[in-house]
Image 1 (tube, rainbow, N blue to C red):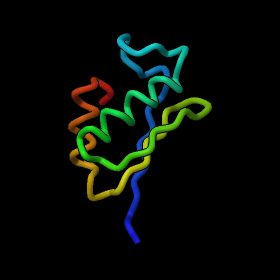
Image 2 (image 1 turned 120 degrees about the vertical axis):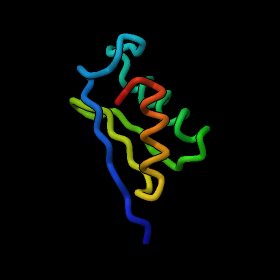
Image 3 (image 1 turned 180 degrees about the vertical axis):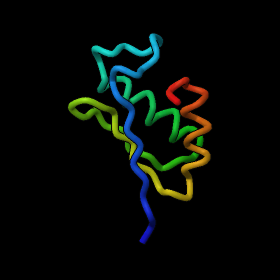
Length: 72
């Protein structure tokens, strides 16, 4: 069994480049960027935050992608 990590990003913390009124689209952009980097991730829109689930072994690589997107 693979250990999983969940990253949550509050909608209010999204940079201006992202349309806060369309969190489902933002989740899709994040998921696509992570998958293009070879990370098996699922990004979904929650009530107050975006939720990104990925294998823990890919956490460092995912953080680098999220930094490039200015999300962390």
